[in-house]
Image 1 (cartoon, rainbow, N blue to C red):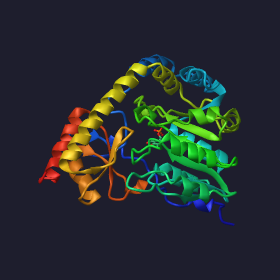
Image 2 (cartoon, rainbow, N blue to C red):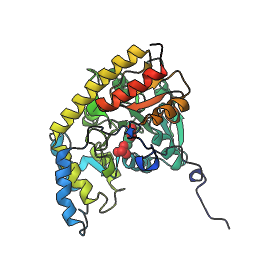
Image 3 (tube, rainbow, N blue to C red):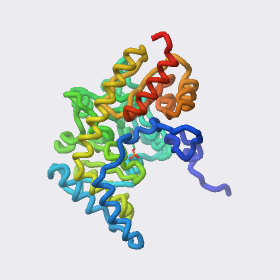
Length: 365
Ligand SMILES: Cc1ncc(COP(=O)(O)O)c(C=O)c1O
């Protein structure tokens, strides 16, 4: 008898994540603008909290995530109880946990490409069918009507992302309202908001209010981006008491390691670091807009810490030329944006180097 491998697991992964610095070799200083990490470092309070937990590495961490959930309850000003938060080893692990709670063979999951590659890849690994309702128009907006008409009895999850990766675009409140009002009760909207700190559009909205109203919404968050703690792998979500209680059953004892938990709790107290990071990102974003306009490079306005651009040359050549100059960027093709590059907003030093290289590539401007 052959082994009973799940047929849908025996397919190559489409989501691989960006390369780390240790995977590339160059004799130049490399500016890694390929994974939307915080280019301005990590929360100092998180680092201080971590240093003290390094003295206790021989001990198991907390059995549960209660301490972090209490810190989150406080951070959200009591809008949610500690039990409404579900913490995981990264945002991506949170997404996987949500899928493992709701998806299986015979179910459907709606995503809207261009989107974060993990949605498609993980959903298929749970045996679900992925229904893609692509973003539409030059401004890449959500096709709410098409999403609502794609829902059927098999639909379990809808993934929407605001600000979105890799486009940097966001979903205005009126569209989120229309989506959530139109979704039937058996479907959960997973509202991925891991870049929310960078959003400054007036009609940007998080998932909080919908959860408060008792809608079937899960807000997904991460400590990897604005807090600058990507290496520690901590993420969390919040949802209604019913959904959170259900998902909590998927948590393992001792799941969040002590160093990461202490760092995340420290980070939540570090609004100063968030303010300075966001200020830097907005300043550099405006600088890059001016340069891209000057050079005639097509780009999409962003609400995140990266900008999607569409170079005129082939994407592989664009990526290679910038890499030779010491800049790593990300081909957004695998995310559903062929011919486009996603470039993390860097420090002024990195951005100036990027612009200098682009000036060589676009010599007539
Ligand atoms: C939209 C989106 N969601 C979730 C994540 C997961 O972040 P992490 O696993 O680092 O917490 C990312 C990371 O790039 C992302 O872009």
